[in-house]
Length: 220
Image (cartoon, rainbow, N blue to C red):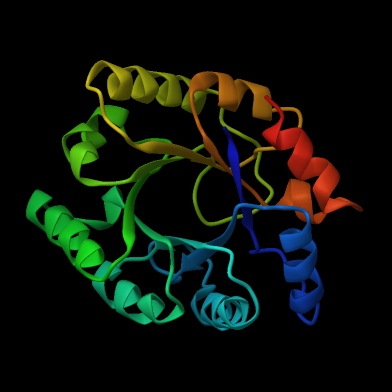
């Protein structure tokens, strides 16, 4: 079963309440929270995302899928634990050494939260293999992180396929999340490659009826 994690990055100011209730009614599975610090990526959404995720937590029980695109991962984890996320995903590229990665995995788990690791399109999928037994999800970026509305990079589909084969061959229980450029034109390739959680923002939020798009994205 494919799940949809709707990125709320492009929700217009003043329309948060309307969008959140509409997405909940349309049966999105997660709210995807894109947290950027202006350093790891150019854009800075830190305060905006903290505000909107705090608001979501007050009015909705749907799980928060927190994606950290930041240099200081530990600080961001501490900040966003306050909104009780279902999962916190940090970038492999944010960490300088293996011990740091293992320490962050342990720290997130100790705070009763699931753990994900994300990789950029230029990062080799093999770089994440050794950490897979200790996490709940691997997020494969299918665009360059930091901007909404980009076109999916075709080569990233092969990375998802390779990851799926590795997971099956090693009997691992782990979700594969794909993020970037996912719409009705690209979704079949992403699902066929093995992703079971799809992040979509622009394609859903630009639609007149969120449910129609979400149902199409989920379709087996």
